Image (cartoon, rainbow, N blue to C red):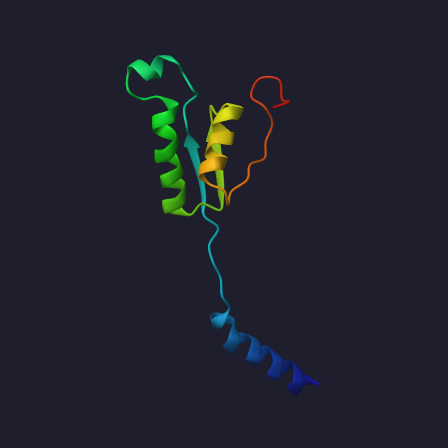
Length: 96
């Protein structure tokens, strides 16, 4: 019985380095709320959204936390990033 256990243990230790593993890539990003005043400054949400989507694609985040996001901003990002989904609760009333 001991020799079977030792054989299984030895095989496990030999095969352990060959197991495929991938690190979880997590990030956090303040996307800045969609402030109408940013349009005049050349920093509107419509200009920022494709840049943020490109950053998310580049880093291949598995999980990304956002700050200051309005619901419509998450929907815009979802259109640009169809392989991603979002979960959470609304920033104001928790409904949206």
